[in-house]
Length: 449
Image (cartoon, rainbow, N blue to C red; front, side, top):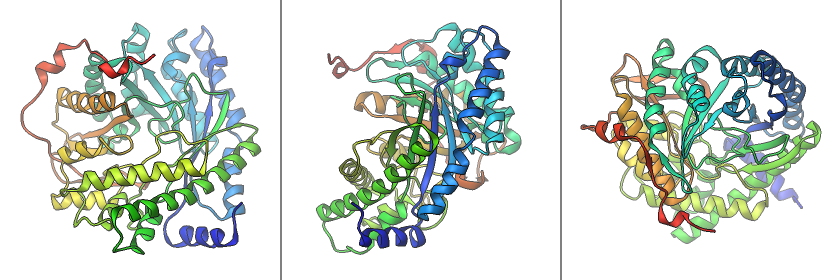
């Protein structure tokens, strides 16, 4: 039971420490929308989204007013469209229907323009993937993801090679907005089916018909809690993070269950990821610096991030039996003011970011790189990150933005997507390796039955 002291603490977290519900995401199955006619499939998708999502924004506003908790985003997530459109081939038509329904329901983003090709690609999945650049260039709210590897299957290097080209083409088609389309495209290994965060959200085939999943936030709350125990050892810091994550998660589950009840949906999970914003005081990098680093990116950063990520998970799982999604600490460069400043200072490189992804939630996220970066180099970065995920049996991802026409400087994406310095990459290339294709076999520890 929540007591009065907890309520007072929560009010302080919201008022002074940037605590919010980052997203209420309504996950919707579209299997009942499939038709052999592509236009009919798209019409069915539009009608179902309009029916199921019509009260999402209103519900979020009511809950936010009732509890005084900011709810930043209202989002939709659907069954992978590579499956829904396989019968008709009307992928782009479905994307247009998704975008239209999201706009008319005042939804911020809709995820699920997705393909799962971790082992191989069927012809219709390749056809689907090749539509991604045009779809992201011509829609406003549609987000796309592709899963190219898993611990069980290994890494589909044919898909990895293709995705390098897709990222580059998306950058080209959206060059007038600093290649913003790439911010709506993420490439996964070990993608999860109940992730409420964009751009990688989709409603997995094992999920229900209509499900509410909630993504919480709170780097500022964790930083404030750590600032009160400045001389604590690592064990004490871990306990402080756990206790803070516990309180944040309880709030997330309260909101999720209330939203599900009001929408007539199933309550799914709370994703307890620490999701930063470009606002000072709401940064994962600043949390790491509060733990004792002179700057994020220096030696010791990976150890601090590992402890933070583990403590957040432990605190969240104590608070709720319905933890899911990604659940950890995000390190998106453009969305975290501390990360941005560390890159500007030269303290944070691509190599260090890659090392950090081995212990945090997800991976190389919202990183702007020179526009001249080749498709093969993008593929090599994807392959490296997928390897970390596959070998360590964790979710990893790449959301990288080769900014067309720019080699240095800074790009501003706006809103929660923030702004980022263009991060230089190393010399050399892996062109021959990427051209080999095939599949990197699953690791030996994957064979568990």
